[in-house]
Amino acid sequence: MNILVFGSNGLVGSSLVKNLQKNDDINVIGSSRKDTDLFNLEETKEIIKKIQPNVIVNAAAKVGGIYANNTKRADFIIDNLKINLNILESVIEFSGIKVINLGSSCIYPLDAKNPIQESDFMTGSLEPTNSPYAMAKLSAIEIGRSLKVQYGHKVINLMPTNLYGPNDNFDENSSHVIPGLIRRMNNAKLNNEDTFEIWGTGKPLREFLYVDDLANAVEFILNKNIQDDLINIGSGEEISILKLAELIKDVIGYEGSLVFDTSMPDGNPRKLLDCSLINSYGWNHNTNLATGLEKTYDWYKNNIS
Image (cartoon, rainbow, N blue to C red; front, side, top):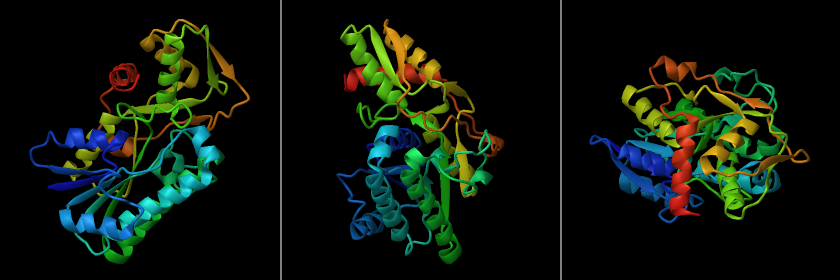
């Protein structure tokens, strides 16, 4: 089986390539932005025609945390729309290719009842701070469904919860919560700072999944030939931002005090995915949060700090 992974140098893509390469029955080809300009439709078509994959995994995206999503709204919707549209349009003439499209739990409504089920898709308004990014992901789902109806393509949309792990974006201004906390708290430790500031109240509840567990879920879905077109992927475990920060504090060994800037937005107060569907097929996550944070911090120390 030939699998083409777009976005192969990112958090998800690098994990997919690493883990899929362990399977002798899979020939995995990674394509990063250096290899393929996904903003260019013809270039995207050309690599698909050249490789002739059985499966395409779309792990390419412009991503970021609350601050980046809320301040660069146009960039997030335009860039992600272009990436998704070019990949999905490119497969029209290749009817035998299965596409696994990696979305985000942010597609679900702000007021969706927790745990959030796949059936909550498009039943209410989005969380406003990252709605442009969410709209791009929603569009990818609808394009994929339209390809299935009109052309018979197989497109599976995976909705992972908040991901973290090696090769994440650790930029202080554009990262998600875990890599952002790791970088800033590590710097606070190195600089012997007495206090560490966290945006928001610390009260929101979040679910996290170590990225290798998502890679395992993708391989599981391929091996089981699961055909559902929208599948939640999560850990089923939630933690407050305060408790998360305390856990990261222990992993890093930071001895200062945590303080909260309540003038900054919290985002969605709670988000937990209902993963009954994928669990019913026999898949469950393997990595608990403490272990995943230790692995992520070890990678950060060896590669970035």
